[in-house]
Length: 218
Length: 218
Image 1: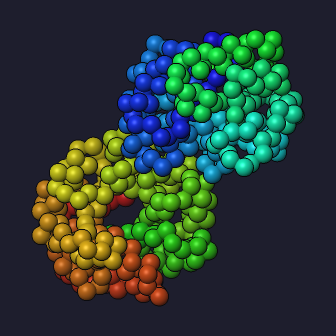
Image 2 (image 1 turned 45 degrees about the vertical axis):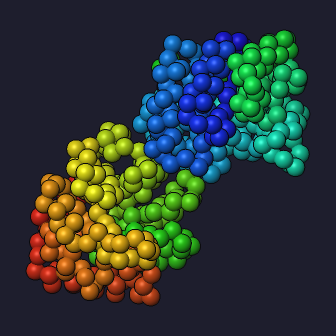
Image 3 (image 1 turned 135 degrees about the horizontal axis):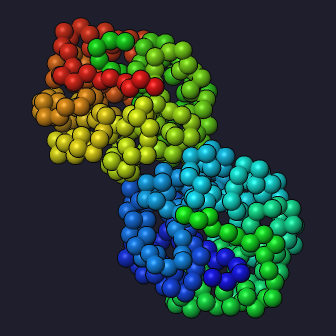
């Protein structure tokens, strides 16, 4: 859609039916990806949920990423995986997945970002950039740290953590490739409108990604 | 080794170093498989643990199976996976894995056993057959139920739950293909001796598996 990616990370608290409805709305509003993150769920539950969401995304340009469970992503035919520090190593996962499936990695430092890039990550998320309810009491890393990482790697960096329409332009001006959001969209009464507001704020920044996110041809 | 399989299921309570030592002992005593089951562990921890255990099994005839996490099994190059009711569906997993990797499934009824067979499971475990500390207050299903399942499917059935050298012959006489044990070996002061005692009891039963367990050539 726009120059900047917007990934919506699920908060794992919604019932399947409600989640499908939110996903439908953010897909219609142009979200680039939905990252299904549901840490407490057994594999079968995550698989069934993903199976329910894929048809909802059908005919939209929104991709489905699965957090941590590479086997669920493969089994359901998702567009990629998003790994955290406690997930399987990026290089092992990259070797397991066909080329059209992307591998993302959460990083919290420049060292981790460089390591993820070396290991074959297609993109990283860095955060939390702004104060967020997801990380109460933990000071945000701020846009300067984000900029330093964007300038040090050659892969797309998505800003995560406390991103709202009010600060999205500030994030965009670091050269990041977009944003990943949880609360700002999942917790919003109107997720589609929340997504559109973010998209407008990013485009209105006048900035452009240093390394644009490109989805592989599938 | 013997006619009957003995699979040792880890109890997920031992530190890595201690677990490696137990695995070394049961491998030397002739265990057919170690099933790494560690439900609370993040993927990376399970992966590192499996990475540590594989060299311990090297040069023995003991295979490594990973419980639930198919991605970890693939990443580390294990010999197969063992699935539970909340794991990915057997048929999806079978489609993801190369032929030399086996797919096992825990079942608790004849219907589940038949379904696992239809879905392509290489073997099932059925239990719990005898009273076990792993399932306090839950009455055991008993050897008659085990026999009914053994007689109804064409794949190997392993007995699980409360198997000891004292009742192993009774299990063996159902025609099952072997046993899977946790406490009887993992909780024993001398895991190698515990495994040997089980093996002797199974062979001394004079019984033979209705459908012997055969590992694919790897």
